[in-house]
Image 1 (cartoon, rainbow over the protein chains, first blue to last red):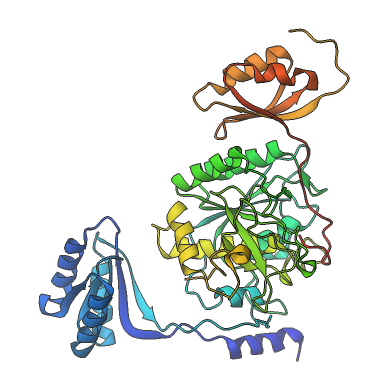
Image 2: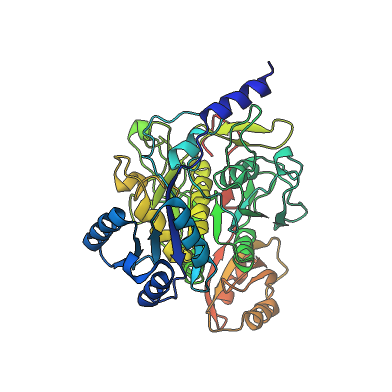
Length: 405
Length: 85
């Protein structure tokens, strides 16, 4: 048996598809008032089978009551209806509701499972980072969401990119968007690598179906002029990218103020429904008790600063922290991160907040796909609200480890 | 102001008040000897090069909010698995 066949068998034996509960979830458009949504629901399932619930006590009570007689419950705040009944009937109701202008989406409800606990490990089917953030178990893949990676470019001939539409632009004089260094290919792979698990390569991209925009702002020598980086950010914003990932920066002095230029860009992005995430930096030597402040531009308050944790959920020794004026916002997997690198090597594992940052960008893309209203500040808020407490102080990981929907 | 022929040019990022016309400010700076590389419209900033002796003169141009050296500040470490990235 070849390695390929062995891996395929291992994959088939470990993959568990989402399990439907038999109920349907119907998501109304956010601009539809709750009372109107309830009328629509009542018209379809029958007024005697529809309930509305506004706050948590009501929701609990309504779901319990509806569960006894196969009713449907509208959750007023989220404009989501849980359509019960026998599975066939619920599907028929959902199909009818999905055809209505007021409804954005109708889909089966799935059983959810507790997130796995650390230590996380790479497996034949996915990397430990994808396991830690719940990407492998998520029903979302980033479809329809635009992610920009501003870095050293990408290996345009990498086999995992064959057939994939990329939007690329180089801001570095006399260099194409091709990655002659490696860093950009690794970061792009983590955010949105498309390799389906199989062969001897695990899945390593958090949002494999996202639309990838690659702006080369660092040259093949790994360095970049600020003007080119700012031009790259502006390009990504102009392209309508939902998430802009920047695994780059420079060290800062303790209590150094943030640069208003980057803060203005970050704030503009949030206002316009876009989100910029940046690596917090790797200047700490925690084994010697030194925690370096968050670097720039991650230290701008409107740019999401990303720290790195390891597979044991511990803070990475190099990860910069919220000391002085700047804060860490969230954390992502950033130790022993397996992803793509330029040919001929194809794949390798690296450490750094540069690796944590695209994990967060990928998770953000999954949230953005799950709800079109989650853009800009709303997306920032959701990432923070759903981050997992891994038992580390906010100084190190902010709100915690980002988690997929 | 006229300065003697310079020996070197430094790279600068010049932030411009958001209410001002970026191109007009760039033209004014150009007349002083600033060479504009990029008009960064969303950021209301210019990147370019100038004789360092012009720095204080550029600061005095109407609409200029902030002048600072650009440099090559963003540099990745060697792409080596042993080095945090």
